Length: 366
Ligand code: FDA
Image (cartoon, rainbow, N blue to C red; front, top):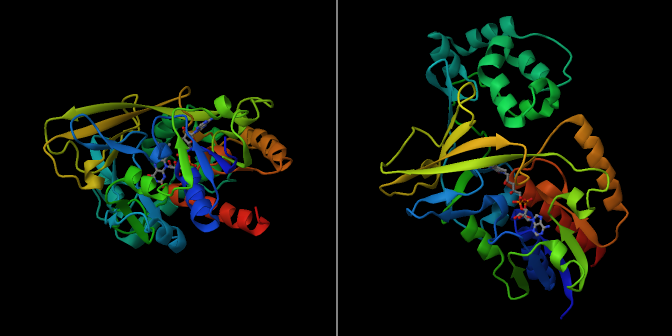
């Protein structure tokens, strides 16, 4: 068996960015090992039996302010212009989310101006020490809005109350004092014109890159010779959970195809206070696909299953640090990506981390 310069575990955006850079820039021989039957990681999309392009692991909307990441990915895809919108079902109404001037006006039947909205929230905000996500939200919008929009959603999503989650989890949700109904404020937003899978396949299209699907790293760990390892799977799994397992939150997706053009007015509708699912996705709004049927997806959070989200509680960060310290003691083994770094990373941040690691590897002259 020929010696590979790099063995990359995981064919998600992190692993594929590194494979592409190493093969194209350093002419390295790379083997990507992926336990699923396809490349793309969680960004994977495919046509379902009814011909609708669906995201198999939850809605993936690309957005970034990182010009270099956007430019890098643009070598492998053209973009469809799309600005994401989310509505949330609260008190019998579909309201724009995140909370904006429009949300408050619709919810309370008011016609506040920006200044009046600031005064409205200032009366409700509670100043307090910020130790967790509940403190974070109540200090921004007060208890009533916290309870209507966040408390139950967070409980469903994470299986624990916001008071047990790190402040950063909910700090990501902004409040808007204007009528902007878009979910993200980033400079570059869009969807790969032919989908994420096609974009990622183009990244891997180099004769030096071999891809081995349906294979867990553990199966070939001692069989395939390589010089360096890049690991984008769960870091605790690499070390056989020697310090105990890192908790992840998972999701169950329930797909349903309907014989109608659209089911709901926007791509994502949140249901914070009703049902066991947190939201319904309808990707046609984002992909722009024109076809007669539509496929919707209900997302049910759960503890067991594929590791989707690192659980951002303090005790888990401490456990992660033990694994990170072990990782630092290894030579020629690099941990990167959402599971390798045990950090929620958006796609652009995952690509950024992979590009940065590539620069480090190049500087080391590997
Ligand atoms: P990713 O998880 O994609 O890939 C890791 C790969 O490694 C997987 O394919 C896995 O099968 C494989 N693997 C693991 N262990 C292995 C082993 N032992 N052997 C072989 N293979 C192994 N981001 C964004 O910017 N906009 C968005 O809208 C969303 N939406 C979103 C929704 C949901 C539900 C999730 C879970 C995530 C998002 N994201 C997102 C985040 C996005 O999915 C994330 O940034 C990228 O998937 C990160 O890519 P990675 O390659 O790091 O991990």
